[in-house]
Image 1 (cartoon, rainbow, N blue to C red):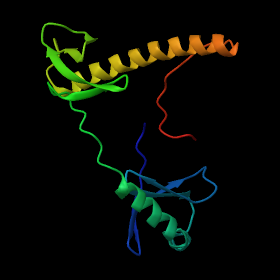
Image 2 (image 1 turned 180 degrees about the horizontal axis):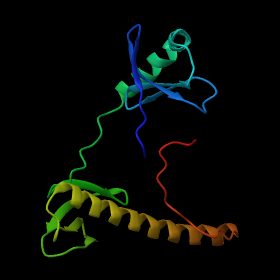
Image 3 (image 1 turned 45 degrees about the vertical axis):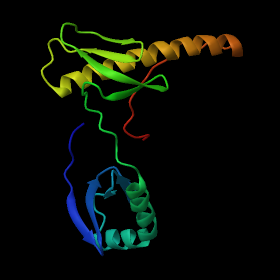
Image 4 (image 1 turned 90 degrees about the vertical axis):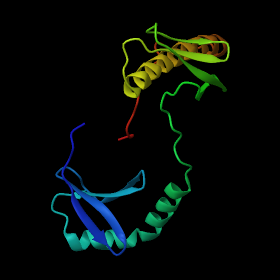
Length: 165
């Protein structure tokens, strides 16, 4: 994804990033990870932007409160002995320096670390394994439910969407 330039704007107590888009027709506010961004048409006047943000201040307060009320994200660094979720249960993460595969055995998730030197590579390998497990599980569930509902789906995909539009 390309990075877009923005202007930093402070309106009352709100600190936000102001993005101007040539194809945008109207103003919109977004709150993502506690960061406020204002998206407007390119020639949207600054006074109109200020007025718009002030009109939406109650909505912004609710959004900020909702973000602050969220629990901290779990620390998903692959650490030997850490608890990781798998199929509704927590399993213990174990490193295997002699293997390059990930496998589930008993109450353990065994991560093959051969060829990996850092947490980023370990996390990537775990993520790929989880994705393959999800695809396999969903395919089985799809087959089961398609028979039960007498439907014939053609395909099943797992995708990552940043936002809807």
